[in-house]
Length: 113
Image 1 (cartoon, rainbow, N blue to C red):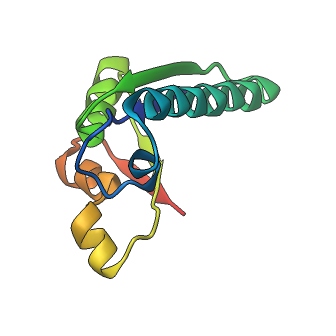
Image 2 (tube, rainbow, N blue to C red):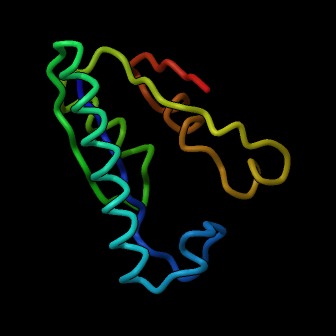
């Protein structure tokens, strides 16, 4: 099992509330710390069930591409990812990493809420 967290770089023009309220350094420090916590929790849960778990943290302006590339590089046979359930104008303006992975991946994708 591989757990991947993609940290998007800070953008001056964004709709991401975390980036709007932060300086570049604050955002990047916070985003990396959140990713580290999530990866550590995934490792703990996998270990509890006797499953080996590789963890990867990358920074990318194209998270969907980073997800697909990591899955291909690791030889994954399935990508499992959450859907945030954005609808309407939010989905249109913000796009969806999940939708982009579904559209571009040759590896099967399992989407859960």
